[in-house]
Image 1 (cartoon, helix red, strand yellow):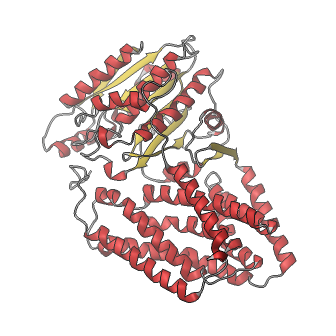
Image 2: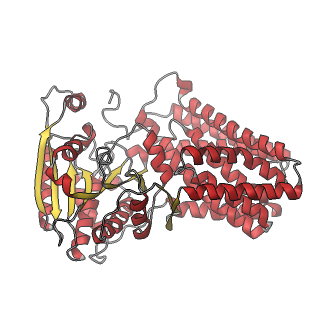
Image 3: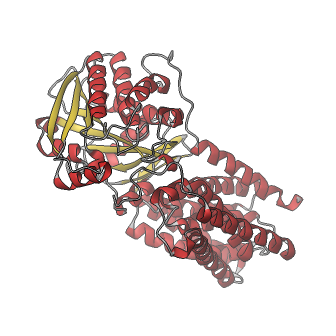
Length: 559
């Protein structure tokens, strides 16, 4: 075991970094300073708003609106409403949920304005929605956003009058097709005086809050975030992935305009999405604290800015384990790739080419093999696709699917790399397939390529350094980030695309190779068999398990 000491040390550090990065902060108590965000204070509104399901047009929704309006007025806001009718598509969905044949329901957006010193300056908007799906009290989606908005407004007011107006927009009919947001951003006169918009959402009941979408040409907007937010959670990779997925939120009609725009959400405890179990008691208060803390920091910075951020070239950005935000221009990625290429060529020049092809073959096999194993395990959990899976059952199964993916990834690593004791040139060979993928990513999706570019550069530095402490540190950094990224990917797309973690696995494995001592073949085979049996068992557990108690009440009908 002594020869595995460096690897185990790096792995322990990586796991600790992952836990810190993926764990929300603790909820700040109600007796915290008035200028700060307190999730415990905000929970008073969550308890009231999320007492019952409150779909658009329902009597419960009217009660919720009255509560929000009273709270806005108590905070010294100028309160108004905008109204309209749900369109035919939204009406059809609402009637499918209710089992009735009602005429189009009325939607009511709530608008509160906390006046600033300069009423003609472009305003900052906090946006959330007050409606829920049928049958869910919606403690997270989107009562969290409403309650966070109220607590942010209270904290801003406690800091004294700001230079510009702060607008709190609480839309209606989001669950029926962004009805209220589309109406407001198309027709309401107030939209002409807006300079920045912050939207808050949730898909689940916990986890870290992430800034997962921004306005286009976000360089200046993201610099404000990077400078202001003390416990960040942000990723231009997440923004890229979200942009190619067929998902919408109330920010969708906003980013068609020139406003600086930010979209925050948490997606942990995914089984609570649209669930009858999405109650205040089941909401992670740390997630509410995380959302409110980030939004308060950003709102305060925007309100104090002499000029709100304008369009600038898109930036690469990500939080480093929630400690600070890394942000840099796209062109710097090319510099890093050139440095990586130079470092690898230096190693080959010093050591020769022996092992280059073998290393490349092993890494390519790891990428394709792990993806194939995870695809097969996922199909097994779906009964080989013989019957369609319930979407909400799959969300509830994400923790088990993560365990399945971890065991399957371990098996793939052991089969292809466990017994290998690579030379420096062999590691350069292993890096080559990832380097080619990194070049393609840098060319086609430069804001998303950092998760490939930086690990490649750090691994190259580790090879050049030839120092165990440096190699342990770089493995811990890369491994910790890839574990965090794998967790986020499984939460986001794991129920359908678990093989998305094949690249994070390959990058983590690459970072470990400089200190990998090799493993006896018999031991590697034994652990591989155990991992595959464990992964298969978890897949069958997901397949044979009873329907989740957290299922949305309408989930047997088409949405």
